[in-house]
Length: 180
Image (cartoon, rainbow, N blue to C red; front, side):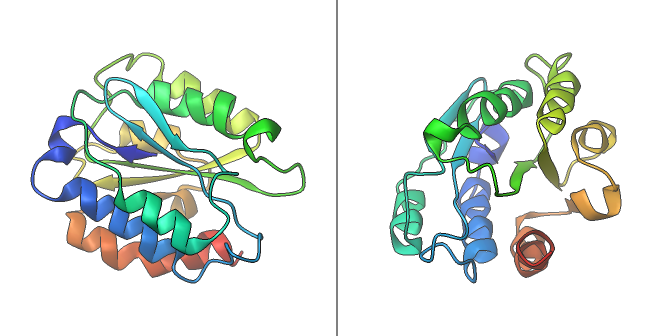
């Protein structure tokens, strides 16, 4: 789940989030079918850019990511979490019953649309056995992110000061998620 709110569209933050995703997936076994990747962007609304079963090769996946644009708006993490749970991690869209379901939410701020539902949606998502990693980019208060992330927080919650630190975090996130 990539933040495409107005603050992420300023400068190169949105493109850096995509670069981070590519860094995380650089060593992933996508072509062999072990790992499937879906991508959702969110601002006022969430938008599924592609489902888990859309791209079966890393080159196709990265090419699709290169076509994405930041659309701007407010920050609606509740809808993003709901869409991940109800539309992405379902068999028709590539979910596999024997595979771990992992969602990564990247944001540079706090929810300001349906913010009263964000934690509820995170709770419902985790109850569906979807692990949620949260990554904050310069987020001043981490309370919301702590409540979204799966537990233990030392494993599922990350906080970086800026997008350059986000890129450096990529290899560590790959090791944490893909080699557990």
